[in-house]
Image (cartoon, rainbow, N blue to C red; front, top):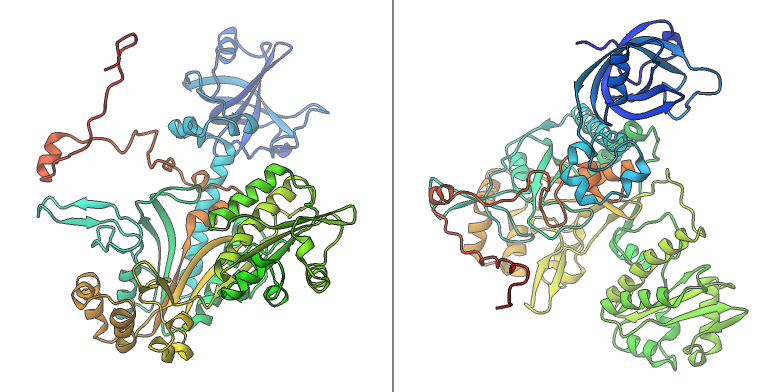
Length: 609
């Protein structure tokens, strides 16, 4: 059995040739007693024709009883399709194969859902698709996603090799470091009571590789986090992990811009412009209300703190008096927002602790809102001028502490954009990709409940050199050499320049983070020991590979670009995992399970206990 061509290969120039094709029966149509079967393989589809005048009754009857997705081999002659019957949707749409011989390689049972119609398949319950993932992956849309993923992985490796990087595999059986997200633990049978942990990232290993003199490291690393899942989260995921020695932030920016330029060209044949725009964390929050802004549309936040600090509207002036700010944004064209939409936005505000949401609808020349009567003419003029208010606009306010006010409007801004897109009032081209670097994050955050500082990124992130003197005098003003790469409102990845000076690391650990020396030794001792023997200046970054592929494939869920993903509950419906293990396995591991006993449902008609 050897096919002569794949199902995306035949063209008019092949007319008259006898060919052998193999694949799956994608669809079947009976037109006037002649049977048409679209044969599909990994590369595409070809229309085959079963004409009873040219075939034995046995062969034709076999073809008429084939279920969708049965696997067959055909031998036939290529011919140009009759005039008016071309199919421009497929590359082989100008030809068809008149079948002479048919061999059934495997009959398929009736499918739990169709795979030949994208619109129908997309409406199938996702859990059913995941249960029969092998069928779901036959869909051309899903096969395309995996092809893009493979191409991008190859392009990444080629690019990194060209830049002088070594691909080094780091262990997946690691030491537990119980900060951050929960870990998956692996019991050690050889030493009962001890455990490995699956790594949340190769962070510490890649820094030790810099101490080892590797200088330029990367890998497509498998990482694991035992956390609640969302559309862009999985318990196991892949990241493009990178670390470099003897570099500064500019070197990281240039490397990643070059890599993404290569990836976009490979996957989408799009030339993206470099260098990428850079904005500080503070500017991102001030203008967009989020540290991963989508800059493809406006609706930027505007500050009115000075304009309303003496306002008779006490909600605004009171917030300013308490050290807060007054922010506003203009959702152009949304004055007609429904009551339900206003309630949704109000709930967003309340989720951040606000008591409600102040807004103004500009309709029929009037500013419709109970708060307008408190505004002076100067305050109205400031609003009209700074927000360019026009008929049909919706003005939304937030008055709170700076971060809260920004984040309230940041979330509402994204919601308004979704509403305007649905209404056709905001159109964003599918091939528009706005990249930017968000830089100069605060090095530290303050936990009021625990009354101590914590690392905004991780404790090895280096402070901006000019801010090092502030570590002991004014820690909240210290900026970290942390950077995030963002596209269209999605964080593709982040990284930092690392601390390599022992005295600065000691200050961060002991004086600011207040980590006891014994705990530091337990968690990071082997790493700090390595740093005693000549740690070079170094830095790195990690890009979320699954998320990157989802963007390139135009899907909102990374489950669509992973061959065998988990559900939102962390289960694999196809293999029914995780699952219980045998008592013998537990005994070997010296583990006793103390899980709650599941109550069996009472038999129908049985009295309740």
